[in-house]
Amino acid sequence: FVMQAIHKAEADTGERKGHYLNVTAATADEMMKRAEYAKEIGAPIIMHDYITGGWSANTQLAQWCQENGLLLHIHRAMHAVLDRNPHHGIHFRVLAKILRLSGGDHLHSGTVVGKLEGD
Image 1 (spheres, helix red, strand yellow):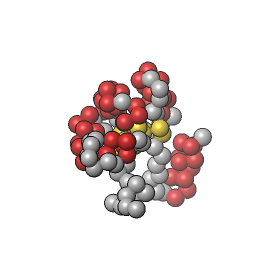
Image 2 (cartoon, one colour):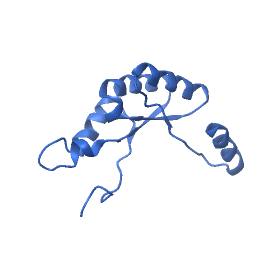
Image 3 (cartoon, one colour):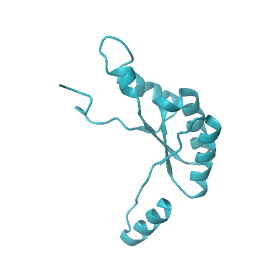
Image 4 (cartoon, one colour):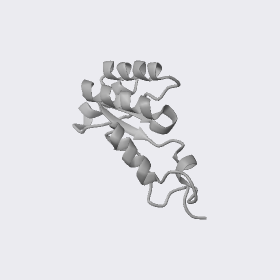
């Protein structure tokens, strides 16, 4: 399993290694089961897709992470549906601020000019 490989790589190199175990699920209950499993196997960081997973689920997960000593990395899957068109939607800076207010520790923000920019 991935955590076994991480522990081995840390022991072999003396360096910290990481893996963001994705706990995003169709329901908040399943998401929390995955988070509990991540904690059981020693994952220090978990990942959640905050747009596809939902704002309330993200807040619930963030509170759980704070109570259980895990970091919460947020992925932005589907953000372009909300922020790509300049004439409507929600600017990514606003989405990022909402994420921080809901408790995410850090955000996958992509590149300055990424695959969804330009011609």
